[in-house]
Length: 424
Image 1 (cartoon, rainbow, N blue to C red):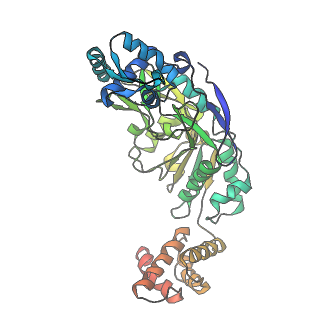
Image 2: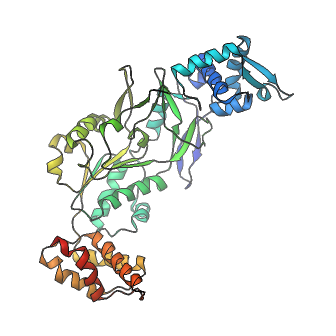
């Protein structure tokens, strides 16, 4: 079926994807009457007697859509009307009869999901491609705000914009401590705050199987859909192949969507790539086709597969040498590669000064001179993170001694002795 829609404006006044419009009938809802009847009986079984309007609100469907299923259940001696007023059926109080209770128990054994009615898979797919990450508007002026706390060379900054506009994958690599994760998170912040809003369903149904996303707030005209900012999903060393598959609740008999699926329409950041619970090769083999074709396949317990969008900006961030992680076939599918190297001295000084300001410390050129004389000119590669780490140690030393927080050459020497010297 095709979704009905109307245009909205997002939080920043930018055009947002068209919102799904509430269905006027069971057919427009994309569900069968039997399916809605089961949801109604399970709702009454788990919550007790409910008003008609409260049942409709729980299912996130207009009352005119649930009216006919309620009448059917009443005529079939599954439910009864305990009372109401002149407002009409929407104010009737419904409760289960013995037959309805038995059928509700049988339905719970098949699937214990109770909550907003799911949307059909085809509606989810259609909406997902309408709010794709490819082709988002991104200009230098808008991109600078989420990167304002970072010190980047202009050429590196200008490499990131086209990567965001393309909506394709990005590989950020280089030695540790130089801002790769901070850059990736800044991209996520841009997408989340400036990329506009998207609509996602509480749950969708595919071949009779319910898949949930565990969302909590509403906002679309069709209340089965939730209006959110573009999602940013971050994972690191805890990522395993099992997290990329549907998670089946054997007791409740419905599924939870995999972690990357929840990033559709937004950003999926894999931090510390190469240190996951699965090998890089296993992870890359899992995604080599989705990265190319922009869709993925999910498998239910019966073994049946169904196609879903892989519509997200995926970012790989690693401290390891890319040549040790991926082969040419995979690198070809990653459109943008951004190398983040150790800062030059002028960049280091700007980062150092920025951290001094953030921590309420005076800037000391002598302190920077000491670090280069003692360490960086003798083989230690400078890291952007050294500035933050060393200055926070200086701050702690001053507070411990109950003396004014003030940066000197002697204090940076004391801080670096404990932080750096052990690695010489």
